[in-house]
Amino acid sequence: MKEDIEEKVASQLQKARSSVKKSKTLTPVQLFDRAVQAFKWWEHQHKDDKVYWTTLQHNGIIFQPPYAPHHVPLYYDGKPVELTAEQEEIATLYAMVGEDAIQLREPASAKIFKENFFSYFREEMGVGSVVKQLEKCDFSAIRKYLEERKKTTVKATAEEKQQMQMKMGYVLIDGNVQKTGNFVAEPPSLFRGRGLHPKMGSVKMRVIPEQVVLNVDLNMAIPPCPMRGHNWDTLVNRPETSWMAHWVDNVQELGKYMGVNATSFLKGEHDMEKYEVARRLKHCIQRIRASVLTELKSSSLRERWAREERVTCRQLATAIWIIDKLALRVGNEKSEEEADTVGCCSLRVEHLSFEDPYMLTMDFLAKDSMRYHQVIRVVVAVTVKRSSRSTRAESRSSRT
Image 1: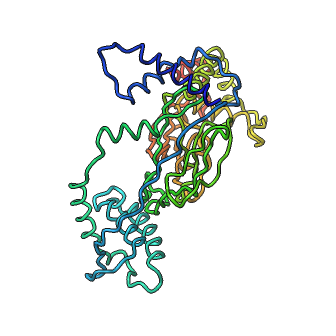
Image 2: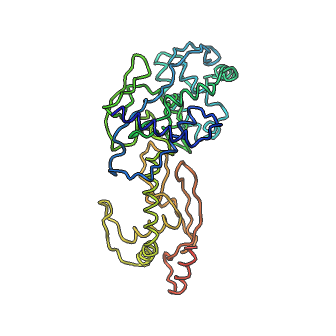
């Protein structure tokens, strides 16, 4: 099996070489990129919609290096405080944010950010520590050190970046060379979030191999763990998924994944499916819109089951009309530990107001805590009855 894959890769690279003029010299990375482009995935029909790969070979992920203490003190109430390496790292993460960061400029966000950070910092400092109030902590010496270190830090050379890309930046899927997405685990930091996220300021811990699940082809070479003395959490064989590495973020408790690049054929096939759905929708969209208008004007409280929840047909029509006309996301219910962002189906009464029966004002936080504020003219009046002619005219104007 391994020999077959090597033959496929060699053939793919040969196609890439043949597409380049002899006078032009390519770097290894450029050559591999050409190999990726040489595979015309749209000419190859996928065998099984539920299986993403038959053979898979990759090199895992890269972890952040261990923390190197700098021994620059934190000052509390004007006096230096001796810190352990773990305590110093957390203090340094706060100093890296900077006093001019947007999370610390706005009073509302600064309160949440500082409370979450100091809660963790106090716990790390221990019960007997002299550090009792964040206001008395002076991080200026650490900030000054970070600024000086930034000036002297030597960036990776182009050759070093190329070597890393060659080693970690590609994956073999059924013998076809594809680019990986982000193959480097995030460094530890303070979670910033967007808007007034309730967990901003929390410490994002360093990712270690014992947290990482690798999705591998057990018939191929298993990626060695890059950290000495550590090992992968679990090795799984799940061809029905397209990710190669998975771990859980300690702040939001959400899954993080290393997958293929957006230019890969797996992403291309998924996008093609979406566009095919859009093409089919084109032939029935007018019929759907007509049905929605009929239900909106109906006074009937007929019920319909949608995902095991009872809703009236008029409620369902209202949601479809909002999504269609305003291009809003559907929206999910959020927990108290998540930012209070909403979509169409999670709108609340306080997000809507009527200037008159036909003018609706919508004001809420949408995805990524971006404010959505718009005044729109609705098709069907809430309380006022109008002639059928004027209603049809409004319907036509709303479509435009």
